[in-house]
Image (cartoon, rainbow, N blue to C red; front, side, top):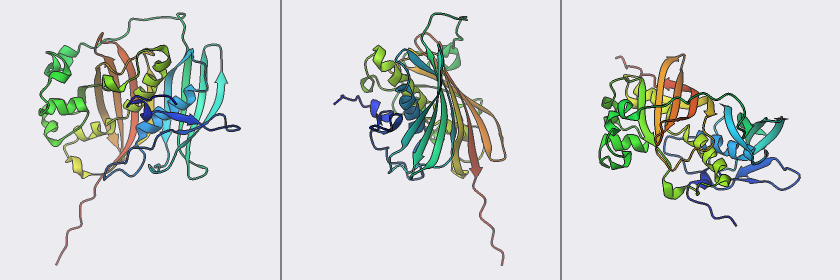
Length: 296
């Protein structure tokens, strides 16, 4: 029986026995959702579909892209079955179609996951870098973990969005902070664990992302009747990324209409400023309708 670190159960999947060789289920129960949550958190589906697809390609292949669509809310009290279809296998690239199914044959989520064989061939350009000292002056001195635990900046590091945070940003359409998975919760930096780090990066890509919309509106945060992901695309730029180090997180949104919003996200490695992930999400965001006024 493998010994799981605290972070690994988030993306752990188990292959079902023959003949369903490419069908996997979540190994551990989903975390109980909050009071307002009505479905499985999308990060679970993203991370676990990457983990499932990874088991159908050679160990020499790393995930490089994830294109997903959320179709129906999932029941957090039931297992999710990830059906992996081997679409293509070339000399360098492999593609997998993953369907997340609950309730018999009801598809709740689909994804195309792309993998690439590790190689030194091809054109290489200098990776874009982020000078976080200039971009995030509140963290320009020392480590993010040195920030006072009771400050609003510490809440940003944790990824939450309390109301008192709304006044911190000069540009309400852009958010920057630091994120990481606690070092004690991660597997050691071995070749066998890189797939776990990448699957967890897919999970992390959806963590609190939709709330970027809340920062870009003058309306109260509680004025949203629904906020849920529709489409979510991730590009993985650093297959050797280690999530037990700090990542600089940059998120912005510049368009919303017809109850939909587009959110962009980039994660940079704090140690060298290298871009490790890009992400775009289309989400459903609807405001509460004002209560009808009574007339006498």
